[in-house]
Amino acid sequence: MKNIEISQIAALPTKYGTFRIQAFKDGLGKEHLALFTESLPDTPIVRVHSECLTGDALGSVKCDCGEQLHFALELIAKEGGMLIYHRQEGRNIGLLNKVNAYALQDKGYNTVEANHQLGFSADERTYEIVEFILNHFDIKKLKLLTNNPKKIESLGSIEIVERLPIQIIPNPYNKEYLKTKKEQLGHLL
Ligand SMILES: Nc1nc2c(ncn2[C@@H]2O[C@H](COP(=O)(O)OP(=O)(O)OP(=O)(O)O)[C@@H](O)[C@H]2O)c(=O)[nH]1
Ligand SMILES: [Zn+2]
Image 1 (cartoon, helix red, strand yellow):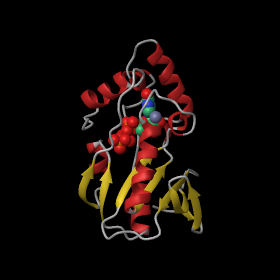
Image 2: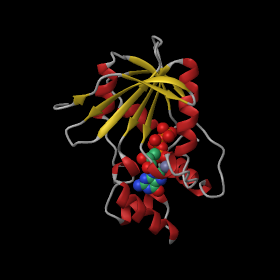
Image 3: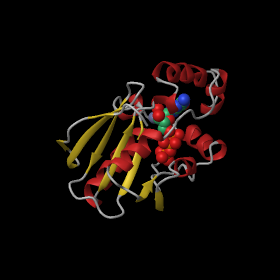
């Protein structure tokens, strides 16, 4: 990847513990983050968390993102590892399109159908920047915290020694969403 701007490393005290933080600005101007523990095990736990402003910051329970983020940060703070905050909101259709997809979901379309209605594929994410960040830290093997087999495939240049599940308890608002992820997107739920 070309033209990646990389910040200094700073301390980020959080309610989970103190992480180190470093930012990576890609060629499109998107700013991604790596949050990592002071000591990184040989085979660290890594979570690639896709941005979800509604779930991560606004307490939305329409998806599982917020709870997954908290689970991941807690585990990584305890065991050592890295969370990559991947700024590809709405599976990379962006926030405005995600809200339009939510409006279609209000009319009965599921998460995949709503993306298709808007002219997108079910998942528009790409992972070059994630590989770049892992290479930057010289992480060649890791334990990936995910339920999504596609994410494992997408990190082709990195050895995924183990997949660690990241499952949350469904609520009435995200039950259908999780069902669609399992049945149509192949998530291991
Ligand atoms: N387009 C679209 N994106 C959504 C919707 N709900 C959540 N997202 C986005 O989906 C992304 C998270 O992807 P998920 O499919 O929930 O999970 P994943 O990251 O593929 O898999 P895990 O690693 O197991 O969490 C975030 O970027 C969310 O903003 C939706 O209904 N439509
Ligand atoms: Zn979400």
